[in-house]
Length: 308
Image 1: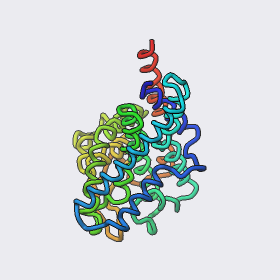
Image 2: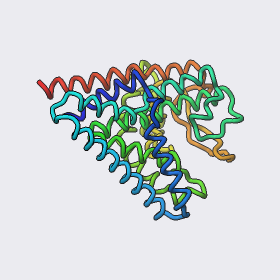
Image 3: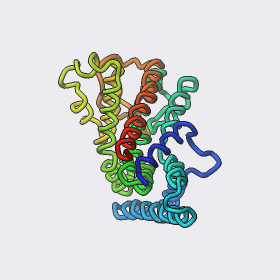
Image 4: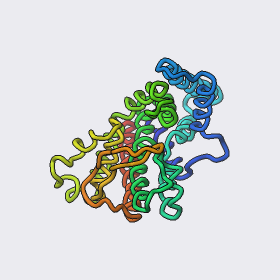
């Protein structure tokens, strides 16, 4: 059984069905564990944060092992149902449909932006809401789609679910606040490590699939190229898809942003206008179908060559 088979089924399943609302999503369960650990074992120390990360990863791997053992004990090794079942399970690590639907929802319900970002949203203007939506789509195209698919193709179910566990850790405790600066440090660094390659793949995909590539990306001044601008983001990874999306759309993202009641002077990404419109959100969302074609086409071609 090839990981590519599982990845193909997983991607198509998520694209068509999205989240399975009749079950408690694995990410929610991971979040429940993190909250439980923090409630009873929190301490302002790096060591406790390491214990949190290692324990969640261990529990995740143990559950995946139990699930795969049970499936293999019920089905013969050559059963066509194996990749289908694994693909359905793996689809819970991919969030393409949920990401698309959530960002598209901002077009009609701008106040829902508070559910998608960690920045303060009460006083955001419409342009700032639009900017947040585009940034969120770009960054999570890497975190929620390309990265889990990358680790699924590389290491199978364990790789995809360990990535999802680390990404969930980072989203819950990986902040540089007084409470989490030490406790969440291990989670943040692990997330940086696992997203290093996927973030750059995502940026490359965005630029290559951009209709405005030659006008906005290649023709911009050297100081405004992807590598130069992305390096100014606090995250070693998030700057790449965000900068790529800004260059592809001919807009300027980033800039001063308020978090937890304090204004943070963030770098700018991209070249162009700063007045981000709802049309820019639609243009960002338009990348979904192009990315789908590349990913599905690539996996299918690989399987044809490998199985020929």
